[in-house]
Length: 246
Ligand SMILES: [Zn+2]
Ligand SMILES: [Zn+2]
Ligand SMILES: [Zn+2]
Image (cartoon, rainbow, N blue to C red):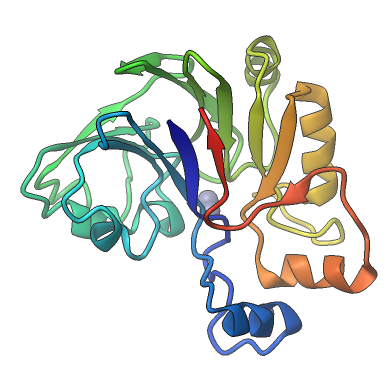
């Protein structure tokens, strides 16, 4: 099986609308559009489990593919906008969420085909041979990261957080993670109470000590100073299409 990223950017994506910076121009030249952070696992029977639903072209990408479940990290637009189209699916779709009674827009008023299931912290859901555990993260809305275990490897999808509480850190350390993906939305000089930056994210990855660590959820404003300084980071930012075997 594979765990693949549909997008690894922040809300605006890369290229950002009408931004002519070096990063955005490079993306235009290569014809690659990297949108909101989200990922999926393709199971052996071809069905998929989605992690977040912010990808603009979700319905096209998985047009006739069975979606076994969506594990939503939180109800910010860049992670849940895809549910607005997906809720018209001819199929019932189970969407696991953190306990957030506000949700987003009219998603809870018009649930249509989506069945929302609140996951309590550290509760495990098993789908086929994949075990998925909700790990609370600190962000501006109730937010979960997810740890996925298969027979082969353990992946942590930890997007959108400003820090990680002790209980979650202990859990993550106990899991012996193979691949850890962590929010590093900003460059270190940017003062944010909602997101990590590439320095604070690197420190946290070191504390969790996975086999491999990667940075996600960046904008061109994060990547441009990095490129211009020529600095190389201990853990790299990944792009859409990045995948690992699980
Ligand atoms: Zn740009
Ligand atoms: Zn967010
Ligand atoms: Zn986000």
